[in-house]
Length: 432
Ligand SMILES: *Cc1c(COP(=O)(O)O)cnc(C)c1O
Picture 1 (cartoon, rainbow, N blue to C red):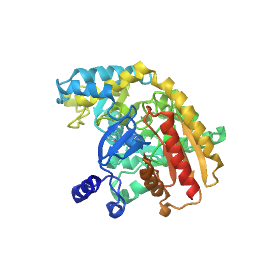
Picture 2 (tube, helix red, strand yellow; picture 1 turned 180 degrees about the vertical axis):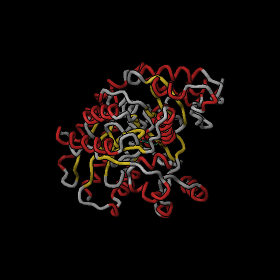
Picture 3 (tube, rainbow, N blue to C red; picture 1 turned 135 degrees about the horizontal axis):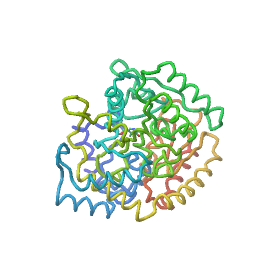
Picture 4 (cartoon, rainbow, N blue to C red; picture 1 turned 45 degrees about the vertical axis):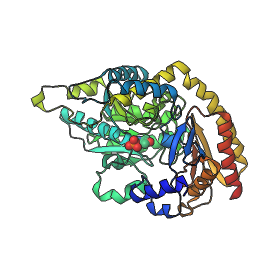
């Protein structure tokens, strides 16, 4: 028996895969990965796959990066984990110092967790709780239409992707959604801001926070919206004393061309959620940065019961923090943001060459993310799945979101590898 086949059969006996209708795997193979290096994943039969989606948007400096590996191994021999209540360790202290320096001015306090959804839960709870500690009960949250903030119940509640949310409508808290600007013109921006202000005005004193994926809605189909909207929405939040939560779980660490999307919009949020690329995509870790003002709302005598009594077992795990510190070392020593500009430019060139195809629309890109939509297909056609399957045959891992095809590679991808991904896409588009 082939090794892949054997692994797949063992897998399907017990493993329940995420975001998957398992019945699909009666036909669709599970690809067991034996090892990986750089942008390449290798299965048990020496087939290689270019990881064109950074293993779900987390990996930025390649798999088994020798520098990050060495730092995690070093940490492993001194401390693997320790409780973060009452205790601390050097990696988490150093990481917090560096994050405070790197992120927009004013974010001073780092609360750690171990995944993106938890970071969103924390930001939502903290924003509600900060108001409450000041004597105001504000039970509502506002988010953008088409947003995605993770899949735990609180995160789903502020999300707006039907596919994930609809089933659970009966058990999630009520939230309000506001439109993103239809386009990049000032009229579009002001129309969306007016809708936002209407919500703020009609629910005055009842909204704890407004949460956004700044500039780029990822899971909602790689939709980009203008910086100016963010900047002005941030001001509106100040006006109504509503906290502004920037969920940069996906956009953080260079994806949109700056270290953080908030930098591009020139804003400081009240809460900044980071995860995914924080550890270079190595280990589960997330962090919510917040301001001194928020921190102080919780600072009191124990028996005033104002503390944020939220915890996760693996909060601030030392191995994960070591991977995060190593990741930040690479950003510092290799001038990554600058280097990515050349790479984005190259990718944009390839993307533009697709304009000749009549069956696609909405070609767009920002930083190290590019996308377009297939034109004239229905959800049921599962066109994305067809490209995914062709990709496996051609040695590329690409995983479209419905009819949205996107490219979101590790930053270490080379031009020849970018070419290979785009020739796969061209072959697919020609076949339609
Ligand atoms: C992926 C993602 C999350 C959820 O993170 P998990 O680690 O998958 O729980 C939250 N917000 C955004 C914007 C994301 O892209």
